[in-house]
Length: 190
Image 1 (tube, rainbow, N blue to C red):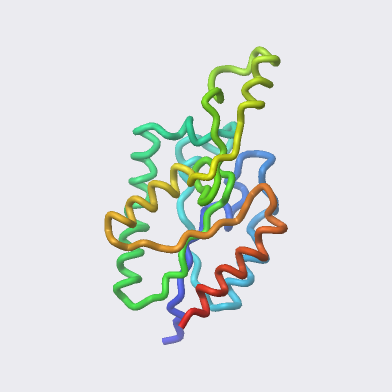
Image 2: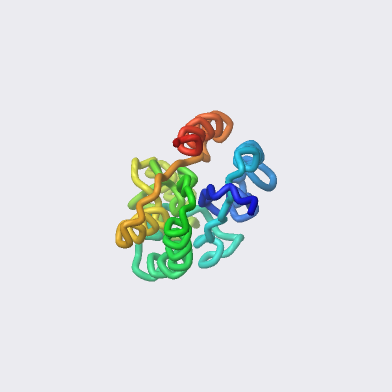
């Protein structure tokens, strides 16, 4: 049996940048440096589903947390995460080392430490002046996105907390080395 018994859960777009909102992908396919590091460490990678692609499609506009923070979208996240939470319990009970979850800071869904928010980001974009006022209202807030927030609550409900890490989509070049350093401490913990 040649199993490393180490697993990390990755936001969907870390392994598939094609799922990101048009114009936001920092790499053409997958976050290569991070993926290569995890492979070299013998860490298995489980790709989380992407609620934005499933609910809104690949031709969606950028959203903010406020828009997605409603009962239907949260219920969709819960349904997508239910099998993942079962896998967390199964692997944990099987003696696997669960390294944690890697999200995407800046995402309205998969942000871990920060997400984009706005009370005014709604309506149409027919009036350019009004549109720019909406854009000016966009802000980074130090909160998780809807999907990660839902995941954390579901894990806590099962007493199966995991460590959450993040790749910052506003500066992936600088955040990947910091992310690898943080994961390394967790991977090599006795």
